[in-house]
Length: 155
Image (cartoon, rainbow, N blue to C red):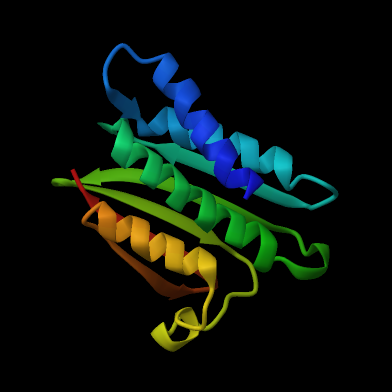
């Protein structure tokens, strides 16, 4: 819950530096990733990288985007690397035609990406599904070594 509040605080700070009602998702990603790196840095041998193309979004949508980003990265930190296993989490945001594509990928232990697995009351996934739906987007996993979550949001 603390990280969710932190995302909203980061959004507010990002908005304060903007001259328009639109939010730089590049700046928001940087703030969220930096905040979560510090929050989960206790002894973990994990590397979090991020890169983003310059994309803006209205503040209401950006807050939902930031919470989705927070949930995906937090899930990777908490579940992909048991027993202080070393690894990496990569975050990227690109524009593809009229869509923003957010990808959060880790090289952790992976999990069953089936819909049945996701429906078993995992609040984080329920929150992601709800927020992505509010954004009019889609959310899916791809089978890789580890986990790759892809969120597509129309711009």
